[in-house]
Image (cartoon, rainbow, N blue to C red; front, side, top):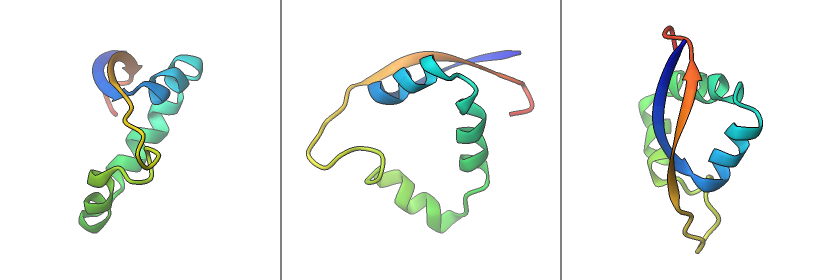
Length: 67
């Protein structure tokens, strides 16, 4: 198993703490995106509520090296 330190919004860190296997779905979703989709993901409009600044925290996630 491989450990990686990632910076994520605090709410995402709480979800990963509760259910760490969700990291595989996040990696898969990121890996399967195309260039046009990445333009929208860079803005993070759908990830954070409008007007709400959420602190980014560092967390350690465990995954297979194949990911």
